[in-house]
Image (cartoon, rainbow, N blue to C red; front, side, top):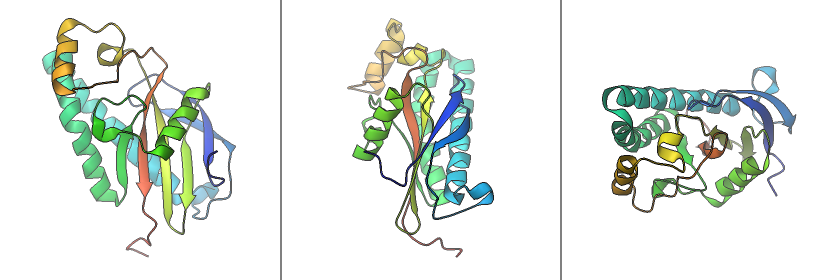
Length: 200
């Protein structure tokens, strides 16, 4: 079962890479860190970081698609996604990443708590955010990434031979294939350490 402090939210989702989600709280507990509207400051910050991650990655993919097609986009995603995550982690003092039950990059393999949340996302018709606070200052956040039409170029069941060859070269042991539109392909993840912020 999920921790009792978890906040689960059901959402109406768009089917885009950025996965914009409009949420209403369905199950919640009173957070230990509060902000405007009685929402955790870390929850609000997690949403902000996730939106920035999605926007920057989407821009990089679009630029690569425009200049070199899907083959170039594979290289951009391989190089840019980890860099964006590392930059956001350093800038915010949190661990920012993406993960999935079927990873393409083994470095993104889900931890046990992430895998449980991903299974719950898969089992829910309209999955939404997951947010859990722990200790005095720590928190964990995940936001699902639904599969859109563009995603099927590299994550679908019917990949072109050149795409398949490039993926095999870039990601030995790639599991992130065989998705359909609307499937949960993975999730953004943010973990805030259980330590007092430096500015407090």
